[in-house]
Amino acid sequence: MMKKILYILPILTALTIVSCGLDNRDEPESTIRGRVVYNGEAVGVRGTGEAVQLQLFQDGYELTNPVPVYVTQDGTFEIKIFDGEYKLVTRNNNGPWVNDRDTTVVRLQGMTDVDINVTPLFTLSNVSLALNGTSLSASFQANEVTQGWDIDYATIVVGRTSFVDDVSYTVRRDLRDIDTGVLTTELVDLTENADFKNGRALYARIGLRAAGKDQSIYSQVVKLR
Image (cartoon, rainbow, N blue to C red; front, side):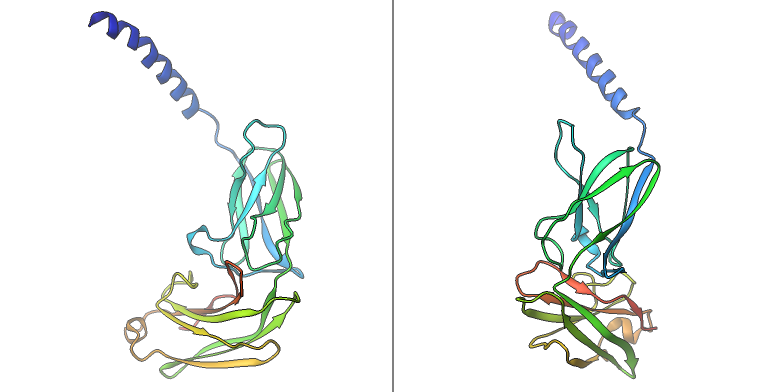
């Protein structure tokens, strides 16, 4: 029994040294930050659940798995990482845009700002969200950007925080048979909604999903009260 203990102790000691060495590595202090944009404007997406991602690659290293870069609901992103040259692309078949996955080269030294240009399938314009008595008055126009795609549905979502989308909400109304170029207006009854009745702050936005895509494009968040 004593011999077994003597053999095990050096192994445990070595593991402890390796572990401490890993823990003492410097944390990355450089930052890549930016926006996913179309025509110079940030593209609104679902922000919860790390649903929309970019991918960061670095050539010349044994580990070639991409580093995920999460896009927030207002289309911005930020990641801390070590200085170097990276390739930044959209995640395959992820997001409400054309899946062209153009590569953006990022040469990082300290802080780098970068815009990732995408081509949405549709956009939203003339968006209006406002409380009208006990109802939410919502109107918007869907615009075709990329030919060959159909609209699956539009979504009106209301939440108690500014982080609101088709997963994080207290009220949701899906609208089908949406036509491009036509102003769509809808009233959403909030009478029985607990947050509305309790006088809580309310936020809303509109999403538009193309058929066959995994994510909706969103309008900016509006504070209703």
